[in-house]
Image (cartoon, rainbow over all chains, first blue to last red; front, side, top):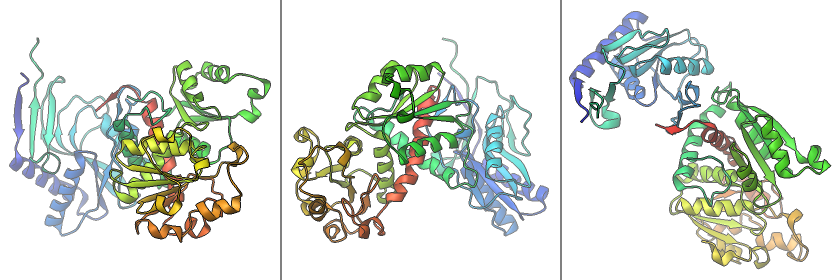
Length: 181
Length: 306
């Protein structure tokens, strides 16, 4: 039986996102020129939530985009993904401060792909990275600017983020693999 | 799991849905100022065409180039085919140059199947005789789905030269698998002999055939494949079978009109339809690039996961 441990509930997730929203505003001295870009699938609802939180704090609406990185992955030859989303960014990102949003950062390869994908769409003034969970084990020199929770994990473990918009509840769980059979 | 794309008759409905969904996602790339994604970097795609083509060949090549593949185009008219080389020898020689995918069009039904069996790389049928043209039907289905939001339960009337049409056959198989009802509407001389064995409603009267239709697809009259005596005259054909604004009064009010191109204006389709708000003919062409990107993506990728 795989065991599952809940490490974040809905309240904790809301507080973590609220703190990240404040940090984004603090670092960028306001909401001006910001664009939040969520990496599909799970980064997109988080980007929309951060935009709403920033609007509540600052009174300024920040545009939100969604980025599909399938075509930029480095493992197409071994694992071609079937479920492909559509990129939609409602503004030109050139000269904007882009905050990439994802649910978990792990090896850093997804973020590498996302940065390449962004550069094909324009030349942002800068790119920052916000994640709900940093589970470690980076394979590339990539580091998030905003972290909801640092979560030490083993490589065999699986971190599952469930979101109200996609799964009907907000939670983060660590699943441990099956015991040796 | 897709390995080749030869017929829609033998393609699973879930694979058809996958290709349509993928193409829908890829459409956004066509609207970018820089139309280039790195996915197929280092892959070589060859288009081998034994018949004339503008749309299909350019569409496949552009799709491959947008995905960063390298493309080479071989037209039989200017190749060693003229020196008597057989289709299979030509295909095997191209493969010996380590190409990764072959897109081919050939006047013989079954030619793509034959080549696919001989090669260990993905082969895409871009039209084989009067048999199938799967990517055309896929782009047609994508266009219909964009306008109607679904395929299931729709009535699609395919009008004109059915006998010679691989587009009609591929659409019949594809649309039927996705839950649409297909009608063939044509003079008896332009209906295939085995039509009663196909899952299709047959009409030999234009108005009855398109009555209540959600989609009317006019086919090109393929005079180059025709024996004599199938038609009294072009003039009479266009009067009785040409899709014009008057004829369309009996369809559903929001009926769209399609044509796989190239159009014979004034023969199977009138200007007052081809250039009207109901015509989605140029959207079909744009969707064609997205569909071919999706086909290349799924055929050339690694083991499917996620």
